[in-house]
Length: 134
Image (cartoon, rainbow, N blue to C red; front, side, top):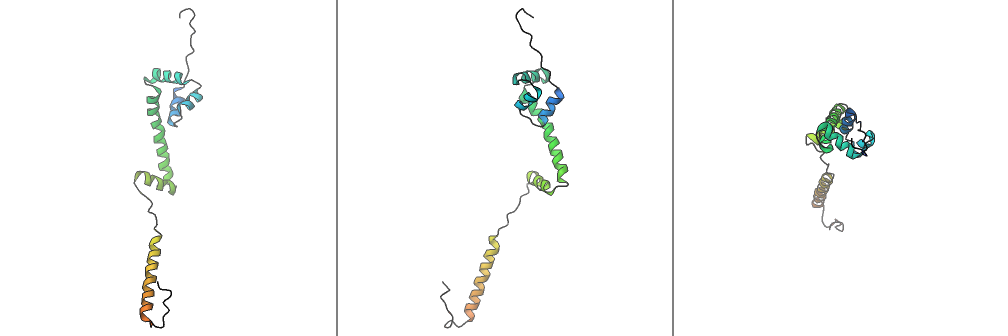
């Protein structure tokens, strides 16, 4: 080392801990805070350890967390109908069909009109008050 140069302390990063933080999809800032390193140090460590920058390493390592979460969701769906319904909507294209409440009321109105016509046609029109028919 040349005179006047300050030797920088090598950061010690636990590879297993780093990968676990990636799997639970911590942000870069959160990972740096937990590992007590700067972003620059984390990037350098990723390059020397994996031969790739942080973004590429993170993209690969977080997939382990995704598969773990998916496994947990599938297990939960066996006992939890809400989760089963949600997974069905996500992966099986299942949808809730909205109940059209207007269908019943339209049928009720149609039946009422038929009844009114039947009553009106069977009665003596001279005696019938027609003020309610518009």
